[in-house]
Image (cartoon, rainbow, N blue to C red):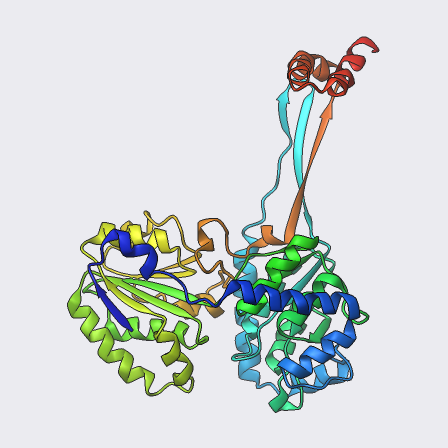
Length: 428
């Protein structure tokens, strides 16, 4: 990791840039694939599965027989772990449900709001470098809580495993009530769910993380009638640590995100040069033992350790960076946390690893990346709902509002708007 000491604030924007590729070229490639899928449906999907995932498919949907075989192959230990995590996620997300009361604005004017589930949603589950069955729980659980009628799932098949889906993804789908699973990855999965094909139903909103191609596909289809959760791209973590932090923990937390992919980014902010030396040594030691050390090592090339002058600089730079995951491993973590305004999910203290949020603490791990935490929230039950407002106005109520509406409509030069009120007033 690159170590930067006391950078000037004018340099901050440059040093916290995420690793990217040429977006102009990226969007052109992705748009061409999407256009092909929109035009040719399943034929195009199968073509791109062969091209990108090296898989030749006869059928896109996972059959009942495949599901049964997959579920039987999972150890009881893993099944139990998935079930426990699902229950924790369910408990936390159930607590987010709120009743929306009717409000009497004035005499005879009653307004209220009703939250309704989005009827058809599509979940994208990455399965390339790692089969993220935990993401099934994170997305399907809140979708079920709010009552989405149709939930479909797309995930890439593995050419090294007889073109099968990872069995834990199938088990997680089963316990969260997902019946339709498709062997489709990448851009082609997003296009299939956005436009619908002969095999894949069209959905109204698409959820799930992915690489820069998946993120670009989501952004492009969102311009054409389908909503998306957020432009969630390569994973990232920032750690704030002081001299009380355990360098073993800090290094492990950095590597836990670095192993996600070569385009992941990890950042350490501190005022302690002593800690930096300790963490650097520990990173080298732990990296050697990782099965995914080649991936993690490449991700570390995108990553930085930044030594700053004081705590306020750390807070300011953090809010400017707006990390997906933020771990605060300091003695006064609560004081720092109160000043954080831009982050996807925050982990407090020396015993709150980001891995807990990824799997079992109950919070959602589908979070805004690439600085989008400045304007987006992570997934919650509101992500799967839409809200409709209602109003009921009595004869007395419209009389009370009439002059206000008439004056405003007249000044906006919208005479018919004014008439809609005036005619009610004079034709009781």
